[in-house]
Image (cartoon, rainbow, N blue to C red; front, side, top):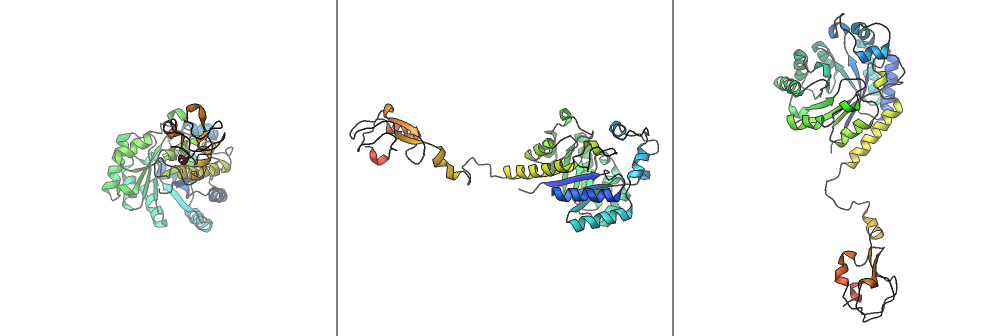
Length: 340
C-alpha cells in the first residue's frame, strides 16, 4: 500500500509575515507531514477591486472592510519570500508546495521547481489555468470544492488534452465552506469520484477536528490536505477553521495508524501477533469429574476449559459415546489416545 500523502495547508495563515510562515513550517516538520503548502498569488490577478469577501472571511476578520481584494493584497508573498521559504523547507527536510491561481503563477512555480501542482477548488473552471498546469507535465492534485461531476469531468478532459496522464492525477473531494458542517461532508462522494473517473482520490478537509480526515483514509484516500495554524485566535480568514499544532500531530499519527490497520491482505486468518494466544484463549475438552477406565463418556462427564491445546470442543459429538481407556481425574484434559 502506498503511503498516504499528508499536506499541511499553511495557506495564508502566515498573515503576510515571513517569520510566521517559517514558524508554520516548523510546526509541519514537527508533525511529520509530507508537504507544507502555501498560496502564490498576486491580488491584481486573483480578484477585482469589486470582489467581496466570503461570509466566513468577513466573520473571521471583522475589520469592517468587505473587499476581498484588500484582504488578498496584504496576504501576498513575494519572490524573495518564496525563495526563503523553499530554502527553509529544504533545510528542515520537508517538501514545499504552493498553489498558484493564474497561468502566470503556474509558470512561476514551475520555474521554481515544484514537483507537484495543486489546483485549488476555485480554479476547476479556469480553462487557461488548467491548460497551463497540464503543460507542466507534473503530477496534479485537483480539489473539487463547489464542483459537480460535470465540472470534474470537464477539468479532467482539459488536463488530459494538454498532456496530463490520468495516473498522475489525484482528485480530492472537498467542501469549500470554512468550517464545513459535518452534515455537508458527504464523504462517500470521494469514492464516487474514484469509480466514475478511474483516478486516485483524496480529501481536502475544511471541517473542525481531525476525525473526517482519518475516516477518509480508512475509505481509501491517498492524499489528505488540512489547514493548520499556530493559534486559532490569530486574525485572518482561515485561522478559526485550521488545526492547532498538537491537533495536527494527532491527525498525522492517527492517519499513520489507520494506514497500518488497513494494510493487511484482507484474508480472515490469525495474525502473527495473535498466534500465541490461540491456545490460551480457546478451550479444549476436559473431564468435569473423576471417571474410571471403561466408562462411556456422556455430556455430563466433560466440559470445555482453557487451555485450547487439547481436543477442540468442535469435536464434542465425536467424544461423547467414546470409551475411556484409562482413569482420568476432574480437570484432566482428554486426549484422543484416552478414548476408544
